[in-house]
Length: 194
Image (tube, rainbow, N blue to C red; front, side, top):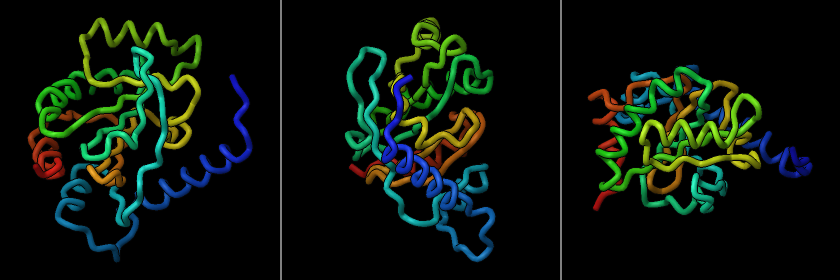
């Protein structure tokens, strides 16, 4: 593994601290939530009560093309951290595909990020799992640990919703059925206006 330079480590730590501190609206009794935030909170999401730009990263996809979060502005993004060895991660993937098929034409995308850590997780296992299941939403392989240290909460799956302006809206730790009517209704409200 490559050594991370000191400034990257400090930056990752500060961003992680920021993500933890702003995503716990449940602990703040005096915070007034918007109707959308309240819906997300009631579905089990931690909501960001202040406008926070999602930290950018650039990570290769399965074909080796570089994908930057900042290039997704204008789209509603579901950022999902996962691994092939994680049963809850695998459990939610089919509903993520169904959601992607339904909303992608309307300005929605998924960035599913896995970080190889041989022998438990390898690029071959990631490619094999995605191919065997016919998933076609964007899957990123974070071999250089550009995104995982910033967004990882210590548990997977962890998902973030990022609005079309590039701001963090909500975080969910654990799996969910992304096609449940309540989730789809909320996400449709967050899609970019045409």
